Image 1 (cartoon, helix red, strand yellow):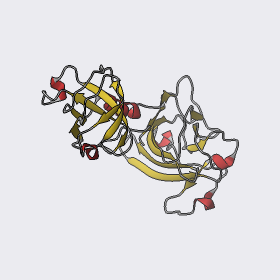
Image 2: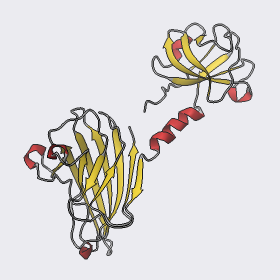
Image 3: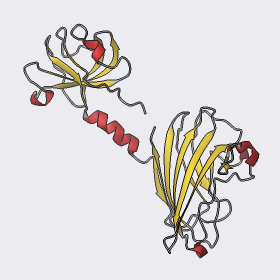
Length: 272
C-alpha cells in the first residue's frame, strides 16, 4: 500500500479562481513549496471568510495527484464532498482526513486470521498473499501443543516440494546460514513438550521478502510453564537458494507431527 504524502504546515491560498470541474489549481506565488513535491495527498479547500474548514459547510476535499511548482493537479469532490467553484484567495491546506486515517486502518487490518478447529494438524497455509521485496509482515501465533515432546516450526514459501524454498534455521551466533541447510529447514522449536508443562506457546515472527528474492524470517518464541517458569528463544532464517519476485503463500509446518492443536491461532498483519 502507498500511503498519502504528509507535510507539516502545508497551506496556501488560491492564486486564481477555479470552476467546479477544474482539475488544475493554481496557488498563490510560492505556495507550492509548502506542499509535498511528489506523491498523492488530500487537501481541503474552503472559503476565505472562515478561519478553518470545519466552519465552512461547503468545504471540499480534493485529492492532489501531482504538483508542478505552484500548480496542483487534483481529483475533485473527494471523500463524498461536493465540488464547487472557488475564488482567488480562498484557502487550501493539506489536512488529516477520514480517507487518510482509513489507510492506516486498512494497513493494520489482519490479512489472515484463523484458528485450528476440528482436529489437530501439522500445517497451516496462509494463502492469497502478494509479498513484494521490501515489504514487512508480522505473524502472531498462539500454538497449543497436544503432544508430550517439542516439534519444529518450519516456514516455506509456496510449495514444500522444492527444498530450496524452505527457510533454513540459523542457530544463535551462527553467521553462515548456508552451513545449516537441514533436510526440512526448521526455524526452531515451536513448542516445549506438555510433559514439561509447556502446553501453549506464543510466537511473534517478522516476515519479509529480501531484495535478493529470498524469504526471510526472524521469530521469537515465548513459553510460560504452569509453575510460571518462562522460556524464550530467538530464531533467524532465510529460504535456501530459490528466489522469487513475490511470495503468494506461506506455510507453517511441523512435518509429520500433528502438533498444531485445536485452538491454535494465527494472525498475519502487514506493517510496511
